[in-house]
Image (cartoon, rainbow, N blue to C red; front, side):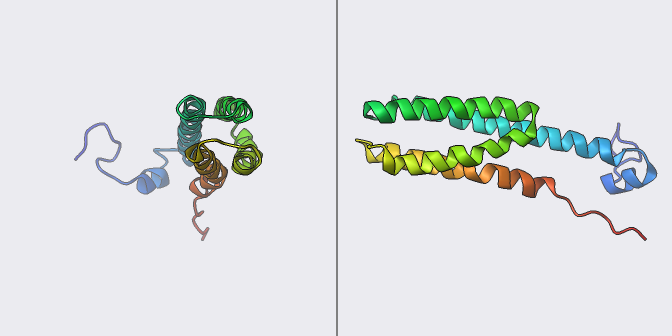
Length: 141
């Protein structure tokens, strides 16, 4: 029997049915942790984009674009940690990252592949957050 858990080792579903854990409050904490985790991940991607601007050779236009996109990514991550709806701003940012790999000339092929890969990852973040956030509701009897 586990110590400190009401009802011994009972599952969360049993604890919720007994009223030991309010469902809304528990779900809110899980959603908040998930949003902060995704925002932290995206901020790290933004830091990587800014740092990658100095790892490979860039033209002036691609250097400015890469740094600006990385800073915007970090800014959206900070905003999304407070207002989760802001994560939808990753869609146009990721679209620009993906398209700018072809529009703006990159002397190094890896820098354009890097932008496309991170653009794809940022595109999937709002969709992933939505899928992770949806839980099937129990059927009411």
